[in-house]
Image (cartoon, rainbow, N blue to C red; front, top):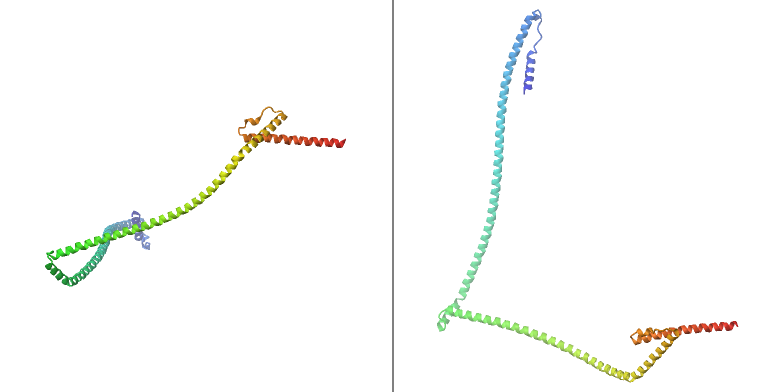
Length: 315
């Protein structure tokens, strides 16, 4: 702001000092006069500058006051705007509450309307039942007179209620007996089904057992035939056992003699076949030794014959 004031005063002073050039008539004035004139002009300029400063100061104060008023108005406007926004927000909140209240009231009205419709339907149903009962009462009026006459004629009952209770009791007993009869019939039907199933199962088992008996009878006959055949074979074996035993003993003795001849021929002192417990394996080993000896002996004999024949051809 100081720089602006200096610029303002400099501009104003320049305007005041920018006077027209002195006329010819002042040229003859002395320098003292010119100096006094210049001092006068400076004094006037300073006075003018002072006046302008005061005027500028007043203007600045006026501007300051206007700015303060503007700031105050701006603050008031801001407060008014804030209050207005607050008021708008309150209005929105009230509007939302009013809308919610209206919505709740509409839902409540809908519920009430449904209740009214339901109650109206119940009223209509009750009216229909009342009309139905009225019609039934009118219809059964003659029955009521008949019951009254029955009570008057019967010594067992004093009131119509007793007659109705007796009828109700008999009807209940009848329903109970019918229910028991139904249960007994169902149980009887269940027993019949069980009996039929048991008879069918027993029949199937009897048929299966008969088939099994037939198969066993066939096996028995075949077993008897096999037994007779085995018995005949056993008799034949017993009759030929002695001969076969004697023949087997002779074969074993002959094999052992041949085996010992082979051992003596091979000059072997130890009989390895004696270590074998099983007689069949022992005889088989002895026969193998004899067979090997005969095979070797036959090969040697053939070789000697071929040598003798070759010598005879050469001579």
